[in-house]
Amino acid sequence: MLKRVFFLLVALFAFTIAEAQQTKEELQRRQQELQREINELNATLGEIQRSKKKSIGQLAIVQRKIAKRQELINSIGRDIRRIDDELFLNEREIYRLNKELDTLKHQYAQSIQFAYKNRGSYEYLNFLFSAKNFNDAVKRIAYLKSYRQQRETQAVAINKTHTLLEERMGMLAINKEEKTKTLSSQSEQLKVLEEDKQEQAQVVKQLKDQEKDYQAQLRKREKERQDLRRALDAAIKREIEDARRRERERIAKQAEAAKKTSGNNASADKDAVAAKPRNAEPVTGGIAARPKENREVSAFESTPEGLTMSLNFEKNRGRLPWPVESGIVTGEFGTHTIPGTRLAEKNDGIIITTKAESSIRCVADGEVARIFDLGEYQGVMVRHGKYFTIYSRLSSVNVSKGQTVNAGTVIGRNAQNLDGDYKVEFLVMNEKGANLDPETWLKRR
Image 1 (cartoon, rainbow, N blue to C red):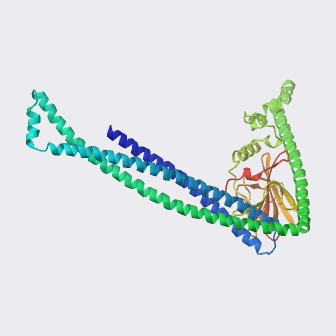
Image 2: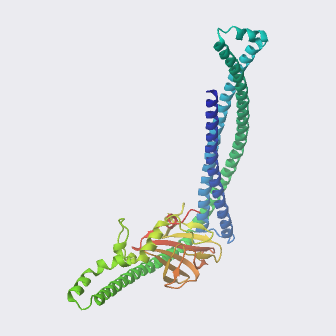
Image 3: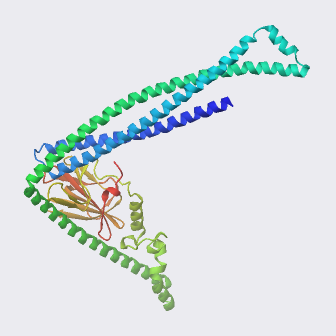
């Protein structure tokens, strides 16, 4: 019974340590990721600051850095709570092991004292010869043997408990040292957070002082956004018309083929014409061959290729690669106001600040639908079934209309922005022309 309890305690101890270690590794991995993102933000911010001019992009980076640092501080706080939990468990286990060790030592001392009092051969022989019969004598010999084995077991249990106690005390010391370092790290991050907030206040102040100048820049950007929006709406409309035209031509060819195979039989011709949208599509994988789930009919999914591209794009939601190798999102999806000013910016996609002349890559397999000339910039639209990805603010384009592209194909290179830095605008749209938040489609970096 004693052995069973002992092994159960050892197993519980091992499980608790493994669970705490897993949580510790997860927290430390996330903290390393956050620190890496903060370092990237600082590097990008340093490049922007070389222009010696505060900008909306600089404010976006500072705000993002504050958010990441706050998340890092929160993660460190969770790490401290984890250490406190381990400290509590170790202190409680040390208390329990001390109590158990005292009990084992007391029991062992009693058995040793009893053995000492009965150490003489006379007492041993007297205990055996006082047996009533031979069987009773055998039982008494077995009892003495088991009593001796019990003392040995007690000694082993004392040694093992003492070893566990030393291990727990060592872990307690490590926990205390770890907590001291973690508290120091948290304190440093809180100081840096205050510096980041002061930097944010300075950028906001300068933006507010030069609000008229930035308002003019935002008006220009808004005009660019509307121009791109009109171009995209027109392009999607033309894409829909082309898809419907191709579908009509496909059905007409199927009907013509059905007429030729049926000969001059008038009744057979009549049946083929009547059945053409229904009988032909299962063969070619058209609309009738689409999955059974409740999907809205789209002209872009009337062919097996179009349907496959749509399904693949949907399947990889949240796992698509980023269009740039490295960069920082300085313009998030939607409308955002700048604190302390009347400045507001609307983005139909996301704005990514990158290094100069960075390669912009396609995020999924598809076909180049349109290439736009937007005056100062160029843009590329890629069709993925009923979805579209758009890469704007390019200085050059490496693809051509109608070209089949894969995930990773270089679309072009980014152009210099009004603020002097280099950015690319990335959008995701569906066949209805609705803008979708690109960050929900891209994998976590």
